[in-house]
Amino acid sequence: MPHRSNVNASTCQNITFFSHTFTLTHPSVLDLKEIMPSGEVKLIGAWASPFVMRPRVALNLKSVPYEFLQETFGSKSELLLKSNPVHKKIPVLLHADKPVCESNIIVEYIDETWSSSGPSILPSHPYDRAMARFWAAYIDEKWFVALRNFLKAEGEEEKKAVVAQMEEGNALLEKAFIDCSKGKPFFNGDNIGYLDISLGSFLAWLRVTELAASHKLLDEAKTPSLCKWAELFCNDPAVKPVMPETAKLAEFAKKIFAKPQA
Ligand SMILES: N[C@@H](CCC(=O)N[C@@H](CS)C(=O)NCC(=O)O)C(=O)O
Image (cartoon, rainbow, N blue to C red; front, top):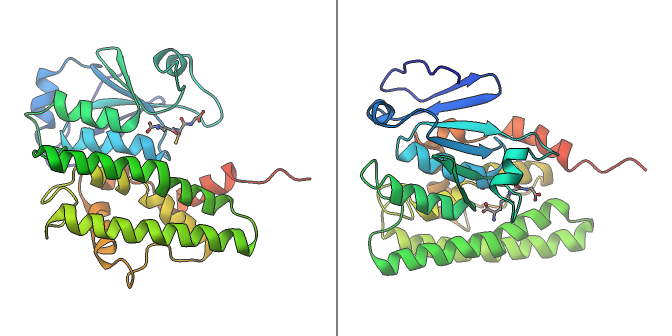
């Protein structure tokens, strides 16, 4: 078992031993480190995955130390296949070796399991919780699908149709932000919460898509609240250390979306 080094209480660090990265964040991490058996929390994932970013942000918010087990792009480890035999996808959280799958379910699990550490991730009122879950489902089922289609779209007509879909989605999310945030900086109010994590984890891919297409998808003039929110989200201490760098992600995107030569 690799040894974990001591960490200055006020820093955020990624410490890599062999192929595993240990992410250590907020001040109270030292307290949790003392009471949690080492190796208790592991996350199977990959740095570039927006879905994996969700539990990483949630674990950071709760100051839970974890071992990051990175999958290699294009292959699936035995541990992944054994831990998520239904979908065979990342992320998978292993808590005392018990697997939890599906990013949003993992985020809820983290919130409930470490309820007394850090801010609440799900809103406290049942109606607000229902709305957060509703919009998170919309983001995965509709908004993200349009973003992915934009990357794959061929020809001007196809691109125009996807841009229209994205703009419609962004307008809905701008309105959802105004309703959910109630004048506060985040969907969840004063702190990052469920819906912030759900949408915010796609921001790096959104930037890469904008660069590749030379087209602004999140437009200051059309969605001013979302643009302001996006900046705050990216600069949050729970987010910054796990947000993929745009240039590195753009390189990775080029590799995975490269068309085979005829
Ligand atoms: N609904 C899943 C989606 C996870 C997902 O699509 N993960 C991708 C990586 S970004 C994956 O594992 N893909 C491998 C595959 O599709 O076989 C979640 O929210 O966790």
